[in-house]
Amino acid sequence: MENKYKNTNEYLYEDIAMWEKTEGVKFMKSMPLNGNDSPRILDFGFGFGQYLFAAAYAYPNGMRNFIKRAFIISMK
Image (cartoon, rainbow, N blue to C red; front, side):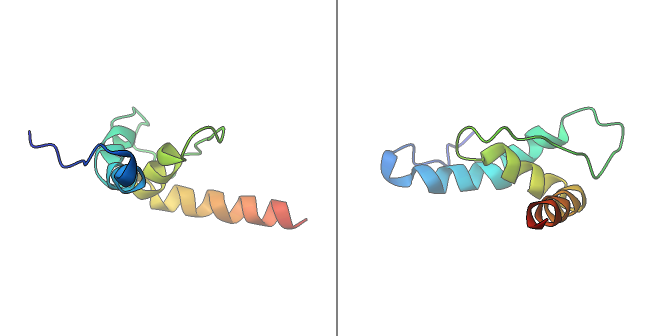
């Protein structure tokens, strides 16, 4: 398997962004969710957010609803 990542500090964020859209999506889709295409995923906010973004790419319906609800709650 060819390494497509640069693995340097200079390209750290680009590597993470690529992971979020490729292997991160595969990782999220590998979870046994019994066909649920809109899961509720809790991100504790530690790190770059790569797992949250990977979840959003893997389950756009669920994350769109989650983000909309979080925004409405934060505006109250």
